[in-house]
Length: 384
Image (cartoon, rainbow, N blue to C red; front, side):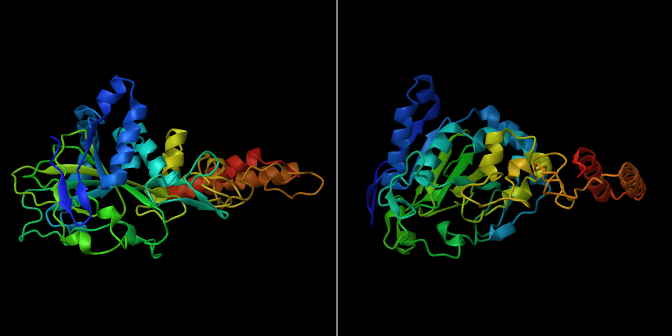
């Protein structure tokens, strides 16, 4: 399936393909990692074939089917297309792809270590390729099913988002910053063919000067044809766009993007996967979607707490004094949420329990949950 080289304004380029399943079976993942990174560096895109099994794709689509079917076509100006997000919360099967080890290693090389040519990590006056102790933090940026129906992209159902780059979403102009802020991945949850509109790519467009220029949009494109279970990876500087679906079948892809953790997420992961759902996820996935402090004081909660020590704890409630759980010094701290006097403590507990019962009677479940947290914190609080 390897396509012939293409010559355009940026030189001669290829859409290279590497088989993940074969590399893993041969215990040659280090060589695989070098190859895919080099392909992105030289050409702006790479296809990772057999990254997951077809059954994994079917399971994901099955979990997302109720949300896909309940979403209208044409959102975001893409005619004949349904776009559905919040995959981390809605689809446990998606986690295998969101946290795919080969994808995460590639994202770390491009984002964390800025390994692509002419890029550099720049921290506290030091500039260079990343290494242990000198890396940019990065995280999940976007999760989205893109379900493209027959006729999508035609004059009857036009795509208003044509060939484009994704790095223009932030207010700051990063063209001359010497870094890659974003890595994008399109997973084939069904076969991507020329007829059903496989993604068009402009090879070498990540090397245009300036990096956000328009010459790329006038260059020939190559379609990233790939089988179900494969993934197309590119940088945020690489020009790409959806194809026209001239077939009678739907094309189902999943767009998973990663970006530097000090930039706003395109899909707010902390809202798309709120704490009561996120606390049930593996720790590494919690951290990947943003429940962590990526650097210094960034992303703390309330009383200078990391997300793991606050919102990911079951009884944490930002409106309950003392919910932080920090140790208290009897000599200098207090009074705490829990009264010292036994009668006052009992009265406060009784009042909270009566209020909780009243909230439940009125079907005010949010208030009842808040009061449940307050009762729990009261019982755990030191009485100073």
